[in-house]
Length: 599
View 1 (tube, rainbow, N blue to C red):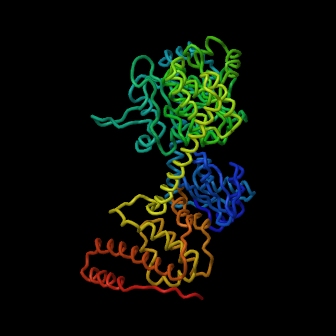
View 2: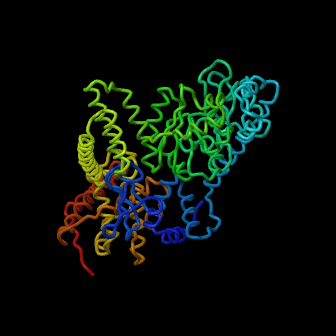
View 3: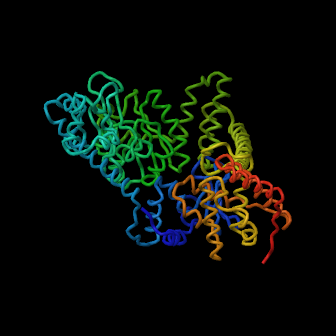
């Protein structure tokens, strides 16, 4: 699907990037730029800048960059078209029905087939659960206390104990083999012709996206067998890092608090008990993509993982991901090592509601976990624990919250408040120094090495990426530079698809006597990676003492770019005349010196 560049630009100009980002996070103005803590990596010193005049953002710490579309794509975990719709809706612009290329129409057709096939499979599994062959699975559900209405609401089913029941059913429904294989529901036999079901003799949990479509399945084996839980593979409609089980129901509560659990049965049990704001990650560690999806629906998260060591470790991994994405995080552990499903089964909904009230701050949880590693009756361990606790407290942005926990650690260890504060100050100073070093390192790396895409051939010459960025930036901002350069360097001379496209836009705009506006150039690219690469061209200003310095830099950059370009042409040349032309171009290049005329 495509919208016109004119409409995309109109939507962008109607959505001031400072206002859009300011609705998401606090910004502090410094001149024409605004600064804040980067939402895409964890930091204590603001390195995330938003340019009001250029209308793009750039993080000197992690390198995240782009225009307002890029920001929406990253924070909302959506693609370019969804970002266009979000921003159009924000300013009340009605979108026309977009055009589709033949490739896009084919991709949409395939996606719709997979959605339809998964709905068919979901009905098949649900029916089998209530037939004789599903009796053991239904008995298992009933023994676990899952009520019939909840079974139906979650669409729980059963994959029969045979290798091709679903495969034959899908054939009867008219689906072809290629689409079945693409869905991941059917697999080709390894040692013989034919196909078999991915899931068999398993209790089936449909994985439903936030719009209510079945996109995959999780299957629990009945009886013996490994793995105990098996999920659908990733497909064009299913990405386990971008979906959470039960979120389709949890989002409807309109509460800004969610309970995050580990598995299917925990989600179902808690939902059945009346707590509908619950969801679970899908057999994978909680990650940044999960957090960005949840950001649409919640501000507060209660992590309720199992109380065993694996659950504790998973909680400790999830906490920094959630905190860095702006959530208020609490942790709840079920007593006596029980999981949430087991606790509800024996104690009921009322006791569970009381248990929720005992959730503690993630800071307290992390400190308690550290405390278990030491015997604070031993002086040496007491010192080690206090140092570890100080590291945790140093990560807090609120002085008031930090002061509360400093007093608690002081009470626990007998070490003075002042000593703990001094330790935290020392850690903060070291962190600040390390952050600045890392930010400068990444800034140099981004400036000198980032091409915006992986090299598909031999490694690019050192410095040529910087040369391309500097030349493109100069041609975009200075028409005299463009006029001096355009006869010698063509868009085809640039060494990546992204840079060639940017060069073409700059050339076309300048030839029409238009103004090259960086944020508008970014509009022409639809992936976050490409948008980041384009923004990097304009994010770091190249400074020259005078016109002579500018000419010197331009000539050096042009020779650098043209040399690599000619080397590539030479390597691919098949005709002796072409080779001779390239040799002559290289000789001319050595003599080349471009001067800039103002006017």
